[in-house]
Length: 425
Image (tube, helix red, strand yellow):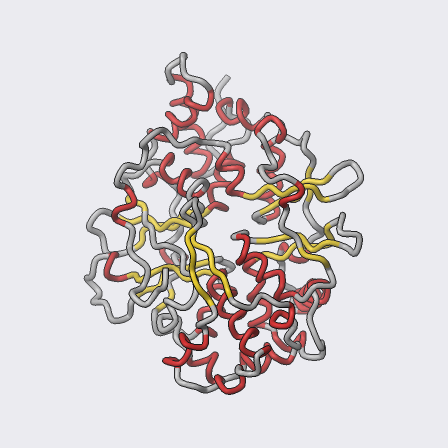
């Protein structure tokens, strides 16, 4: 029986993997076969983002403009292009890093901390050169796993409990409008600028997006001067969703979550925030624990009533007027206000949906299809009573698809573009 023609570029990749799967060495385990197949396909084959959709942010863009660009294009991060670099500069000279919502959130937390200490007002309109000293309470540390985290001398609820008017004051200030994203590159967490070359393999790409915690990967030509493509965890999830039905995928995708060791995190370790806590506390927890989102729990602490992701910091900065009547903004206030705002603006967003959940006896295929159709980055695991007991992220799923062979990367990381010179990492 003749197979249907590929449905999409992602499905074409699936068929290539299927061909490789069929001729793989029979003595290999299913996990080793998957690794072997992904090692045979270069990232140049990954469906390309249209050139007009490779979003770059100039280094002289203001924070306000940066937030607007990320929000408008519904992306978590973007490469920063050095406006002083010549047009024919190599990509290593042309780009100085990747700015992400995690960094913007850290900057916002520093402003709320300053407000709680009574120093924010004096900073409004002050020279940008004073910003680093005003962020002096933040330090960087590297964990035993190599991940960079941030810490602050003050993590109190007082700093997180600034009034709703604070955001309107901040975003209407000249300080916010004129501070350049390039000027504070060493003052908040930037993602490492690690680019794939078109000759690198899918296995390399999948390991970087899972074990090495990269959320997106620019793809460049050797000796090239521009970013050819950007591969994200979400685009990989879409590729997997398009492979449903193919034998290689079904051999893995029909396994139950519990068979694959998901969720990875024990219920007692789940990072969550109660509905009556200040919303900035949620972003503080994300920063402290190194997570991209967390559930908002009801008063019982057992059931999730919503989800707040790191990207949702945009709503504190792009729509500050919706909170100005609040003395403090709780996570429940935040969920309600943003949902109402999105409905009034007739915008579609995962934020409008109920919490997306699953159970441990669901298959990994079920989860992939849900995450891809809902365009979300995490799904919460619940028990038979609806109590939240775990979370599964895009990274968790990719990590169960491949494993890192011994000494696989060698000197691969030697070519990583360093963080800005004034970074304290």
